[in-house]
Length: 138
Length: 138
Length: 138
Length: 138
Image (tube, rainbow over all chains, first blue to last red; front, side):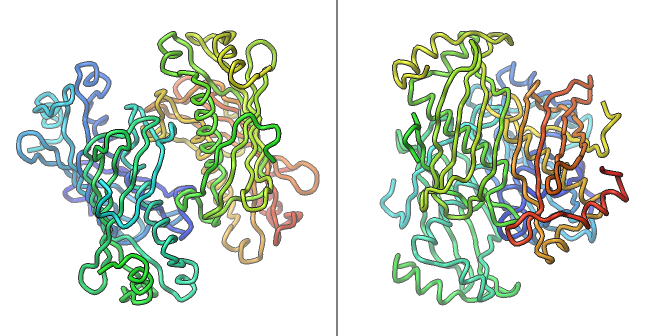
């Protein structure tokens, strides 16, 4: 399950993340994916505070999520991240969630992000350079 | 903005829904959309508890969200719902979020749901009948 | 139930706020109480942004919550606010939650807040003046 | 900081847990404390599902939280649990949160719980026995 991931993060379902149906609420998967992306960027020394001071902010513009199987209380799982560029301005995060016990895929996500400089998309050359050096993103 | 909506629900952004960037966190929009869908079904007298007792549960299988503009503290907004069927088994909820002050569209969402009977998709005839009578969904 | 409240706000339980046990999760009550406090301050024209620009920020230092009965899906309820000062520096918000259908008390809360100016508690004279004029807080 | 804890759990602040003020939202601390309590009970093989089947459910009746210092993005921290009984029916969880980098205490909490059998408090003898054997709770 992890062959092509450039970054993985392990989580444990917390009971307050489950809803009336006894499964993790649909919105909570976005929390998981966001936290994994931020940890990934952090691990590559992409410094959001420094970027922000330069007027550059990452923004998610589109999210596609395919719910395969529900996570439940006490489930351990992995968020796997792949990354590629689309055109000059877009980053695409392919993120999948795998249950740890049986490697079953629970969710497939495609998250599109751009970097805005005072509201306008910018070519994020410094960020790419940082990621390239660390993870060899094309 | 509301011409084609079969259902609308008004919300006010709550401060705890905003994150570090001073805007509503991306995952929270799913909370808004889910609450609007549940209120919509409730308004059409679709009784989840009764369905559940018959072994039938609605499940979201896919979510697509386009983030247009961010909601901020104190913003009032409308969640608009349109609904159509796709094939025999799928319900598609087209949900848009409009800022109340200027009718700007903030988010476009397409949510795919099916009804499962003990894990298998079923043709939700009773639900369709109920919705047809109330909202004339094709 | 509302005799002594200086401010009331009505809510509806949203399904995503309920947890595995089928009731509103304990932490969510703090969301309700916070939102009611912020709307209350807003209604009294206490301008947090303006205060923040003057270096003054409200901070909760202590919370006491007594859980009486659980809120459930579709429950409507009122958050009632009373307010008094304790010593020169502390604001005490007495907040109660009542189920709308039968006026049953669901939760009693006592929230202690101070106003910090660059990390030090300050006597919040302007805020008191604003609240006094509007709500006659002693 | 950990001398008297019978159970400890390490966390990392996630960005979506922070609010407009750039710090962890007050309500989120209850999520941390709840998750730590559930993991603690789990570690002692207290089986909630089995208890539930016997008609016994743990319920929080009172929460007191003293907010000392705010947690921020990327902070690592420990939730420490102490436990004692009060009278025949009440469990008291003393829970403290310590920032890992400097052992500073961030929050002190006292959570009162009882075990209900069909709505009436019961003396939780089996649970006590389990905890006694594992953690020597008096």
